[in-house]
Structures are given as structure tokens and as C-alpha cells.
Image 1 (cartoon, rainbow, N blue to C red):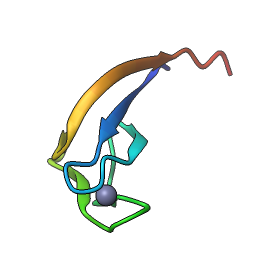
Image 2: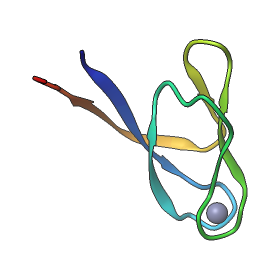
Image 3: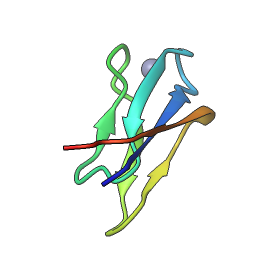
Length: 60
Ligand SMILES: [Zn+2]
């Protein structure tokens, strides 16, 4: 199963954070607490600018 990760830049403090594409709960910026990702049932909605998409293959 492959998971999709995104690098998102916080709109408030420009901290870059790697977020999972299927977050189950709100993900806040580690620096200023601005909510960067909100779950919508399936895919998360990102509040900041997505600068990179990372696909991770998991061969478990
Ligand atoms: Zn921030």
C-alpha cells in the first residue's frame, strides 16, 4: 500500500512540514499552531502551499 505525503509551507510562519495525505485529524504547524491540514473523510485539505508531493512505497 502506498502512502502519499506532502510538503506544506505554513502561510503564517513559512515553516515547512511534511503531512500525510490522509490525515485522520487536524494537523497543526509545529511552530505557530496554524492548522495546516483538515480531514475531509478521504483526502486531507491543506491550508498552506504544497511545495512537494512525496509518494512512499511500502513493501511490507
Ligand atoms: Zn506556522
